[in-house]
Length: 173
Image (cartoon, rainbow, N blue to C red):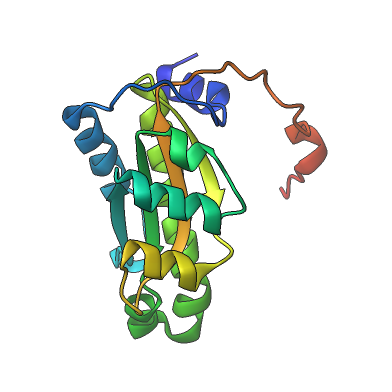
């Protein structure tokens, strides 16, 4: 197997982290991987917030139903969509759908980059968007989509059972 496929298959959600910082070089590589994500029309309707501040991480944890990984991780990256930027080209479909798909690609790139660099991470879904937006001081035009907690793993979770692709796939020849 090649390293990309190995990274995809062996990545796990990590919720417990060691008290070790992420190097600036590795953080920049992860941000570069996020920047490289595909987007509809190459609009790149996203923004990123790199959060290291303990008080802000604590607030994010409280808003996010006490997901303690947000406090334990040395870095949390908030990924925001910019629906109006997508809507300028793709109208309602861009606003409601494409910008969310695009930011999901960013989140996946980040998780794969983190894993390939030896870090663990977990995607925390955002329910209370307005509270998150206020906490990270995002603008009204930014829609928080994901919080990714990143750090050196302090756990080794087993693989989850997966529904086999053969049961989910239909070939149309």
